[in-house]
Image 1: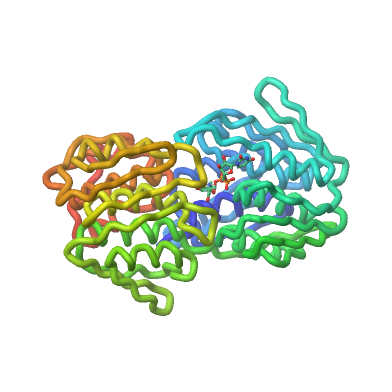
Image 2: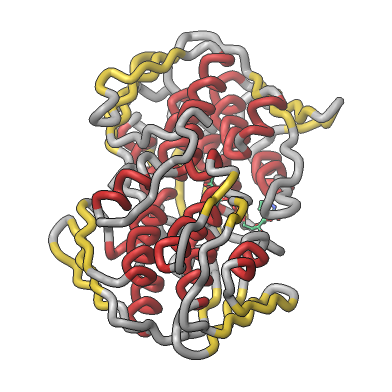
Length: 405
Ligand code: UD1
């Protein structure tokens, strides 16, 4: 198991908060980490793998930086916007290109900006770039309209260097938030309550570099659980954290997957056929929206009818027509997908619309009759260190057709 993409990227952004040499361990070797390294390089920080096989990344942060995230990088990776909070906190200024839509539809950043404004930042939009300024951020109580992961992260990273106390109410509770808080605490920040809905931060004058190991990737773990649910057999997943995916495990168990939690690993085995259940995505500790394509793929071959309800992002069903090409019986109505389980899928050429949907199509291909060719597989490389290699080790017949692309 790798470290979580959705944590590693934010921790890399957080290094901007302190000059010096940071060491990040358990960093996944994925394209999005390279993109964040490109962004840090653009801002003046250097990033090197000191032990690539072990995922040890060293980030050297200089005294002065170019406080800018250009469009070409924000467009390539939306998570780039989390440099906004740390740049404002350390340098009192930031220029960050506004991300456009992506495969999840329109993903606004209004909550990020409103939250930072409450700490005294001001923003102006010009030529597609948000220009932020703040003399010195000042702590405040901020009530988030929705427990947004990105807004909580940007606010947390800004608040650690603000003057006085910040209280974030209705904060996101994802394990990656807790990991970020632990990282910041290691730097000398005073953060309490991360993992709950109220996070309190006492601002400090300065932070120091840190040595930190990234939390394990619950979405990657879910991908391998889905692979077993789909193809049958048994698996042990080293480093997977059952306590970070409880609601998903409850659903998978209700579908008939047997999952046992050992120390530092998960075991799972699948029955001949899973049973359909209804699943709703919700902010943590609910079933994460990122698991959704995997769950839909599982439901597509389960016994019965399952209704999947998406409550986090409008849309995000672009992979459904691809599963339908493989013989799945799925009907999307607004933010619900009604999935009628079929006996078997049939391999077909399909297109990966994004990271997790791409992985779900690969997983679906495991149980499909004949060959499944997933194009746009570069999306999968954005988020998985070695999906193909790991599936092969599990006995699957999967390969990159054109490794260079
Ligand atoms: C992060 C994750 C993503 C995950 C999501 C929810 C990364 C890189 N991405 O995305 O994989 O699916 O959390 O767990 O870590 N919203 C607004 N205004 C804002 C911010 C968000 O309206 O300013 C809305 C979004 O449109 C969405 C909801 O809030 O409907 C949740 O978004 P958010 O939790 O912020 O997700 P991200 O941080 O973008």
